Image (cartoon, rainbow, N blue to C red; front, side, top):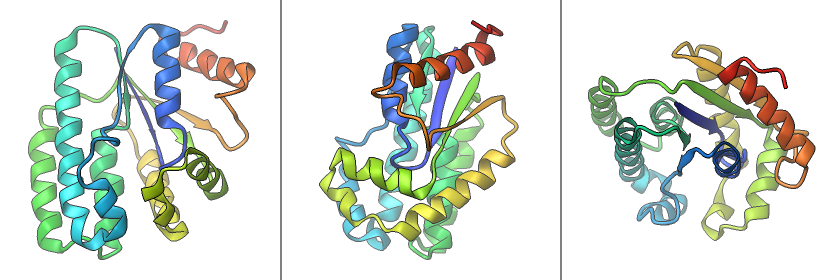
Length: 205
C-alpha cells in the first residue's frame, strides 16, 4: 500500500508520517528538507530561488515515487507530488515569485512525470488554521523558517482547500488537527489510527 500525508507547512505531516510508520510497520519516505541545498536561500530571497527549489522538490518526489513502486512494501509518504505543483509552484506563480517562463517550464516537466505516477491508496490531509501552523513552526525552531510570512501561509492554505475540494484520485481522509495533539496525547493519536483503519481496512475498532 501507498499512503501519503499532505498538509501545509507546520501542520504536522512529518511527525504523523513517522508515528504511523512505526505503528503499522510501514516504511516512511520523508520530505527532503534538511539536506535541501536551496531551502535556506529560498526563504531569504523567494523570487530568485523559487524555480530552483521547486524543481529540486519535484525531482526528489518523483524519485520517492519510483522507490515506492519498486519496493514491494507498504510505504507512507510525507507530502505528495501533487502538492509540489498544485500548491507550492502555483502559489509562487500567483504571487509573482516565479516567472511565467519558468512556471511553464516547470509545469511541462511535472506533466511529463505525472504520466508515470500512480495516486496513493489513501491520502491523509491535515487541515490546520494559521494559528496552529504558526505555533507549530515556532515550536520546531528552524531558523530559516523565521521569515515565513503569515500571508504566505494563508495563500498556501487557500490553495490546499481548493485542491482537496476537487481531489478525486483515490481515498481521502481529512483530519482537522487544530484541536489535536497527536504527539503527546495517546488518545488523539489513537483516534487518528482508528480513522485510518476504517479507511484502509474497513475496521471500526
